[in-house]
Length: 439
Ligand code: AMP
Ligand code: GLY
Image (cartoon, rainbow, N blue to C red):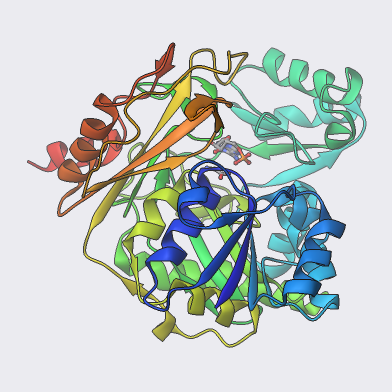
């Protein structure tokens, strides 16, 4: 197949890398791609937000499939434009991507579909939002409605923090239009996990579970980031939970969207809070009465979850994505290998705040059979590879056990260095704590 991958991060490197593993031997292109994708595909000088340029390329080159990685081009309607040109595209239309682009819309869809989630109310007026706080108790969660680069969520421990967050968003205009509406939401207790469902508008195939690490420092301390590491599978999600997640969360959302005239194809990423005997921690049950609640939906593959999940997939990844894009998905499209995966993000000092760029990275060339180095924020200059982002590399170890996978990821990282490099040293700690608690 001839396939174009849109995007330039670790997620897109993992998508292109995994497509390259398919037995068919595809012709692969990335727009714009990165230093890592250049090794497995042909990078095109087209930015991910250049809808007109990407559509023009696709009309001329007639790829069998375009896979859209990031949310921004989805929200901007890239899939709508490609579909209008008769090009198969993996990813939801703009109306569907609103499930990520507007938290209020996501809540409306969930409420209409009867999907368990935190109870929430939406406000544009700060005084009314504050007046509602007592009915939510503490902690309470304040969220900007729109896309705020992962920074639009405040988990407030005190009333004063909650009021400050409301003022920042509604009065101080901290996130601009994205924060012109805020949600006040019930705090959900439990342990988070990510379920990436590949969907074709009606059917859903759940990829293996994973768990992200959102906080920047070991022990889940410090500010939230885009994600500092992931592993798959996440033992907090047992096999017996998967049919319920599909039938009570993913499929009802697809049906409700369809009822609204939206055929949602691509990835429906469910960020879930699990609060049961198997979760660490565990707390009071949510108002929904359910042990599994939706924290958020994303309209795309997660990053870094993708770097942990895709290396575990067997079979033809291109066929899975094409079948989703063309509305003919089946369970037979999913093949999961026995390997366990652990992904560690290597970041620039200062991230998620300010950080320096342009540091030379050494140790990338070393070959490793059981670890993969995905590029997130790098660039090439005079034959050297330099840092160009906060999240720089995403290193995935594979093994028969989680311990082996984690050790292999860290062993690979030990051979890599650049000025002010840092990474979390406790990826998969929840799974290990669960194991030691059982011994
Ligand atoms: P979101 O952008 O909605 O995924 O929120 C970012 C992070 O904030 C989530 O990954 C959770 O760790 C936390 N969070 C968001 N909503 C809630 C909630 N209702 N209860 C507890 N934690 C939450
Ligand atoms: N890792 C979280 C996300 O992709 O949104």
